[in-house]
Length: 267
Ligand SMILES: [Mg+2]
Image (tube, rainbow, N blue to C red; front, top):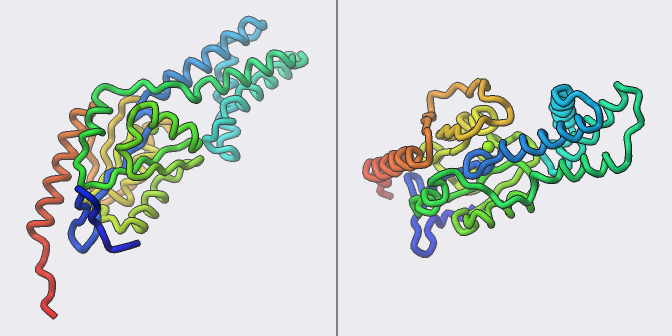
């Protein structure tokens, strides 16, 4: 990567010619995610109850179906339609009934319903993100499909906030952040990852600081154990305004490291 760390109106340079970055998760951190998924599952359970299946069992079956296909499919947008159809077929099999074509079609439509929905942003998310310190690279790191996640960012009015959007179909954020740190020549101690999931986002504590913003529970469950680190710091914020105050600490750390940078050796 080029050692140039300045661009028009922005100076990313920190000690050692490196840059500082703010990584941000999207689903459940910037905009609501779980309520949309829960609504789709609830509609599926209602549909199954109309067909004579037990709705609670239908819900359990769809959860099991989601878990079963995730290792092979990741979090691509076929995941929910496939899980809903598989769950319906499982319920039919249990009852010795033949799956109906029209019901399969409705299951697929319900599975697609959480995607390309106008995002509902958490309070102050947009204003804090739009006001991030301009001398940090701002990178979204999000799980899903590129077109779905870009739609969300675009409709949230945040497309200009991010210098880059990294989309991944699987839970490998720590690896992607490690690669970005190398690619952009980032100083991980003067950077941070902001996310709502202790599991998928918390894994990045192995490679940079982590700001835990649990606005809704993460997919992997928030009982996940964070990586042990003596190098990086974890902060917790209850809302985006608190997160903003923590980001200000990072700005102060960056300034301190700048003021205390060792003199360049005289050649
Ligand atoms: Mg999330």
